[in-house]
Length: 144
Image 1: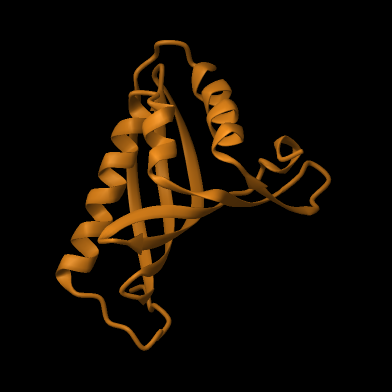
Image 2 (image 1 turned 30 degrees about the vertical axis):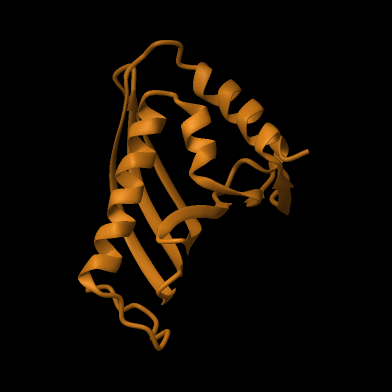
């Protein structure tokens, strides 16, 4: 049983459903390699937290252009292979408009499976969720 921290806010079923719907749309855009749509679902400058090949923690802020350029390169590595995601997400709502979401995911591309574990910080503005911080190990060397 997962015990979540007490943040003083208990999300409603609608809060959770809206976050799940956001991730379903983001995963669908990722599967289509629709980097422009993925960028539309973010708040810029986007914060990134990772570590590099030396084991040092790294951070960066990306503009929309940096996100689009980097993600276009990353997403094109598989060519036209079909991408799918099976994800288990554990959101921690800090308030009705701020959530930290931990994700364990299996990405399948071209028949190969890759395990991913990451966290995102999302904010809800005007009733719409957007990611503002991406946290995942192993990307620090690409943050320059």
